[in-house]
Length: 486
Image (tube, rainbow, N blue to C red):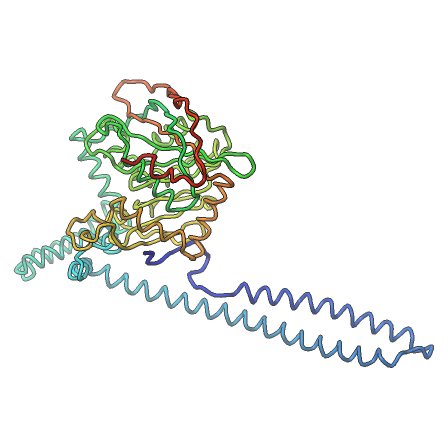
């Protein structure tokens, strides 16, 4: 089920202000027409009266018009007054809402350990996304509180007081703040991984592009999550390579839209698989430059002409890259990047251009989106749908911190987004439907990537054509089950 949706409108308050605006415009038009009619009758009265030709019916008509105009003027005044009152009420409400949220965040921020304990003492022990973000921002304070809880005797010693006295100056000297603790933590992890040869930033080679036939394309959010699930079931050896999926869809005006689906982390220790620990570091710290280059080469390999509309779709690590690619100047200068969808990805700190529509799907118990320590911005172009529920009911009580991150959960729960009437979700589904146009099927390409080894040169992509077949899908065939399923 959908828990709540943030972003997509300029206000967090639901109201019908547009109806009052429309009423004011109609009243203004009515006033203009009635004033014109009154003027005509006044002119007629003035011209005919001196000659004794004034008809007695003109006078009551003129008086009636005057009364109607007076009523319209009153309605105009009342409408404008109500609009002003509504604007003031909205500002007051949203200001109060912000103060309440800030107060709650302040209380939780001062005691991150208490926030965690509240989650764990719930009927289903789990770390919520909100608590995860807080702990990532305040983990030094969290560690201190945990130590005090485990070793209460330390509270009476002078060590705590001395530590507190030097903590502030040390943090100021190192430039450490609540805002950059998550980034510095990831940088420290990257430095350690590089020392153990688990991370090595090298270019990505596009090995080959394969035509996989056709699948149904419904043009909604759940369909994009289904694509991520199909890509997750790829048979390519994950120790040596990774794959992306590109869906080619015919648009309304004859142009094509290409949906680029980027996978989550498929290997932790492989240096050749682009979606390993190196990919995480590249996305969270360096803006995904090698992924951007490989994406452009992949689009060229499948025949996407310059100026084509591009939708970026990514799960977990793939969502980080999708968010980075939305603002990549080289990619945007060649293609029309219009929309991105991220699933279970920590993307709050990544800036996305205002003209790109972004939908972020997160599970309320998923710790992965919380790993950047920041809540997603709620802006007109960025919408976050927070989901709950599990594909496997046993996962609800499991202690596995990554159980909510499973793609099966997102695939099941995202189906509710098709019927969600939140403005941001409706707009996102409409944009996808517009991309699909009249098409009900998409041509699927799978592109194999492999990260270069030291000293090697990037290879040119080779195209593997689809085997000749007379198969052409119909609207009624459920091709989404056939493609990529076991």
